[in-house]
Length: 115
Length: 115
Image (tube, rainbow over all chains, first blue to last red; front, side):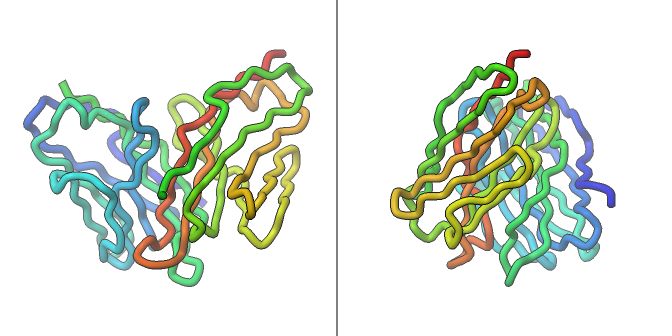
């Protein structure tokens, strides 16, 4: 079974621009979560989607948004980029255990650099 | 109350030795505790996980010990190998409320195993 795939793997953007990152979950996984990883803050939860619905959102500004499609693929968008948005953005997919995303499998991430 | 505290930040072990990484949590609603291994340039990989109804779980050279009363859990890597050199993250999640399995991560431990 193919793992979680994320595209693009690397991105360089300028402050003020917007960016869209894509995630394809493991086949059969319908829950997709997004995390931001930085050296200073570590791994932080952004949001989780199941069945095209955002069920949970982390403590990030409204510039961070996402969506999920009917085939479970997900995208996240960051508008009006700031230097502090430079990070590794990770997508994780999961089967549900009684409605809860337990075993989460991560993709390789998208390295976003904002200049 | 959502924090997971991980120690040490870095660890150097000789080949064949035992690596021990510790985590502590405060939120008693947490009911799932995974460990992830991350190599440079890769996403975190699920290593092993435990639920609070057991005190220990072993998979190969990796063992999780769990102390519910102390709200602590630890990862033991037996017979550590140079290929185990990576960053290790503990995490915790809860099923209740609107969490849906959102992972709260520790800050990570950089493990170096010398040959």
